[in-house]
Image 1 (cartoon, rainbow over the protein chains, first blue to last red):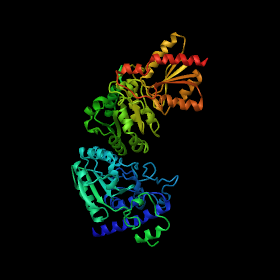
Image 2: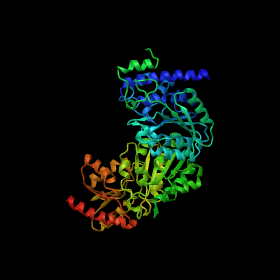
Image 3: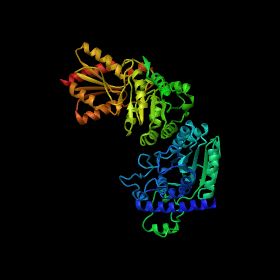
Image 4: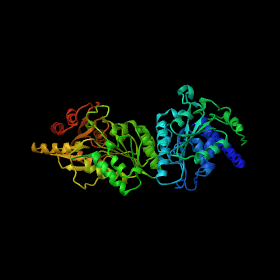
Length: 274
Length: 310
């Protein structure tokens, strides 16, 4: 297990490097929220989820919804690392004609099941998938990564209510709680705390973790799978821009990409020499 | 006479037995939307989502993503209005195989008043790429439209009404998405109509005949994609068009026909519909009269447009 964790940590480091390089190349996209979510996305794709990069539409796969769609770079570098498409494609992020749209688009990108980007809609779609899979008697699970600012959307709570009502225990929501949104601190823009209490009140199983501690992430995902009768919310405390001190905890790095001057320092932080 | 929503309930329950991929969602109005008929027959494939339309749309998109054929229903004002951005983003953008069947469209909702009278839904659904928009004339066409929607792969919006409406089509009438139907032949003008206004146009055409005016009635069941061929033919052959719909004149059938003809065959035109106003409480027959949505208005407009032709 120790080896597995170390392996995932190293994968996450490499994915961070890929995020920084991709966003530097595109000069458009969301740095902070991609770096805060990547540990969880990494654990899902390389530890927890059943999926088959050679057959993206494989019926036996677990489903993934990136509800905070602006963290698309985190998903794209992960899918590329899995082999869903060549890593060179990442250099075309957000370019005209590219299959890597600014926000996830199921029509073009292998491995992406639903379109997201307009915040607040992903949990509804994830629960719809969960209901459909259960109806077919399948054991596949559905994972959705949400932002904490995104929880300000009322639809999230409609979906939370419905998932608990229908006992969607094949659904797991991971809340990337980095505490920042475009206009500043989530607590100052529109306070959503306590996230855990809210999900508990809606009838969810709630697990609180450090969203950058790989062992805690893996344990929480295992616990979520074992929990029956209710959906699970993993409320993960994270750091926006995690891994690169230039970007850490800065709301201004929500939708800003590394410039030429920042790139070498960012890569150095991530232990990347090339 | 049968309400289109009743025909929907019957068709849905029938289709449910033929296709086990069909699932149905409602937002606490299953008695009114008639999805309750399906719910009774197939309780495990029915999801009441409560009074939460945005989530209902997203849930339907998720169900479609795992291979289901979801039909979701509520009143038109809530489906198309409250759910608009969710329909755009979660359903139409990915071309999700979701069928939105909105009941209680138009002013004939009646006494509930302007808050509940959706006269904008066709316009706002029509503006969304990938979306097919259907407004059946009667119960028989509704059954065909629901069947066609289930067979079609992609997003569909079907707009139905609350009240019983006169029959236009015989039993077994085959509905085809995107095909207009000439219900009454004619040469002096064409009524291009949808929904319950098609029956009114048939009545108007009969009365006009006695005056020596030959009115064609072209029923457009699918507003998007518009059957351009029959519309162009009507414009070229009759030289005058009166559109009619139980909807705002902004962006609905009249808008669609005007947009198309303005660029291909500018034609004398008049749009009958709700003139940029909200609805108001009243009995549905009173409201149809109040807003001029009847054969009498169509006759007046026909006389006027034919006189302008000369």
